[in-house]
Image (cartoon, rainbow, N blue to C red; front, side):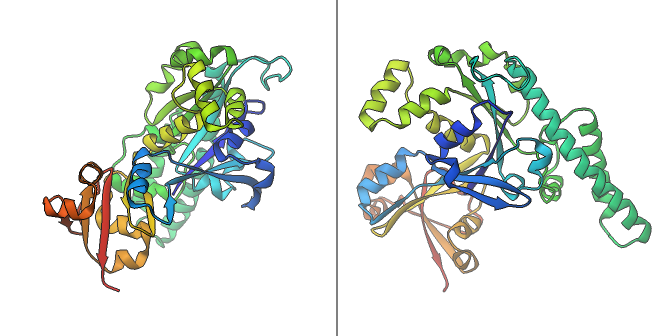
Length: 360
């Protein structure tokens, strides 16, 4: 399951977008996490392949992959996010950037300037991480004097590299680190290490020019940096669309020159930013999409379903979505030699339909 935390200045439309993404009122989903309160809501990852498989197998249950969104209550400062589990554990941060004009909703900084807001928020993330890094380095220095931590020197060198980058205004996500270093840093749950998706909240008048949103907001240069991407939306219009019946919503979208809703664009962009793929399990009981990072091996993918399947893994029966839907059934795919038996180290591909065999 993917987790994404929404951040943003006041009066940017962050709460409206959370409501849009989670399809529920944020007032009804709040819960106490860490030292602050956060709202949680989930959205399905749109996938036409799951729809097609559901039509084929007519299962009792259809389960899509989901993204869980969190929206902190009352404050948006990154320093406060450190204490909220939903943000520290998020796979990515979604920064809602205001690009709409509304005199009745004054901007916290006095005027609309997306570049300034993005850079200021990035600086806040960096400062929050710098505080964590310095505290840990102080602790490591103390431990090294005592000789109580064997790996302290290696960790200290890595954190010193991070501290230097942070002091120079460089987020950790921009560092070219080896996999081993990334694994070590993962435990710190640094905010500036997380991939960043900018949600550009446009004026109603600009929604038809959304393909030029980066040009209009002058964010093109910022988007050239590592692990940053953007999706233009108009929260006001998207909330109106969300109230319509499906057929009317499609007509409204067509009038605006849009092929899909903001929800779909944002969820898909978050999925792609994180480098996630989907594999499927199918049957009469359930057709389900599972989210895994690209490069996941079969044994670990089995663990997404249940740890017992992972521990008892024998082999995986794999067929591609394309072959299964073209043939119409698993038996036809078997007759044509298109069902493969793969071992635990097989790297799962996007769209694989898998049946795991395991020892109970």
